[in-house]
Amino acid sequence: MKNIVVLVSGGGTNLQALIDAQESGIISQGKITCVISSKPGVYALERAEKHNIRTRVIARKEYSDSVEYSKAILSALDEEKADLVIYAGFMTILDELVVKAYPNKMMNVHPALIPSFCGKGYYGLRVHEEALKKGVKLTGATVHFVTEVCDGGPIILQKAVAVENGDTPEALQKRVMEQAEWKILPQAAALFCEDRLEVKDNIVYIKD
Ligand code: GAR
Image (cartoon, rainbow, N blue to C red; front, side, top):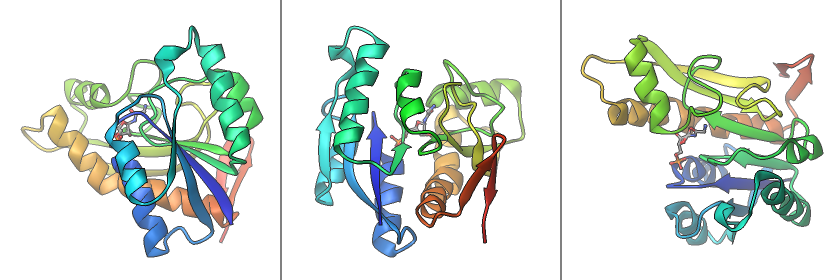
């Protein structure tokens, strides 16, 4: 059984999708043992507590810079003996010292089809605002391994979602979450926990 640690910063709907997938047996070979938030008081923490999952707050604002913050996150992940670390709406970019300690063991969900609308500055609603500004007809979500390149790691799963006439950023965000993020993030976690993901030359292969 793999030990899953989830990193959050906000509402935690992706965390909820992971909890639901664990409870329904979609994730059968892994268990969420700890949720770590970069902000105190966020709803994701309540979601975890309701399901008796241990929570920790490591507040970004209490650290002077990204390296000091990353060291605190790394020591927490080591203490928790994480096999898989999932960024589920985690809005802080960590220093490469964390990524190097967990190569191909950290995954992130991003609300667009990478390599579109990704990288530094593209997070949350901002991603959907940019997609609407560009007038794309298809967007979606991507789950990828985290590397030192922001949103640049090997792609695990993607799902496309149609943009509709009259979409607001909020409406598009909701559709992308419902139709893509909440499905592919649990699927990717399940595949990892079943040892079915193999990375060769930055490409992810899914084993039968
Ligand atoms: C999600 O849409 C997630 O993909 C996005 O923030 C939202 C968090 O919602 N993440 C990023 O933009 C990361 N670059 P949640 O807290 O309800 O899961």
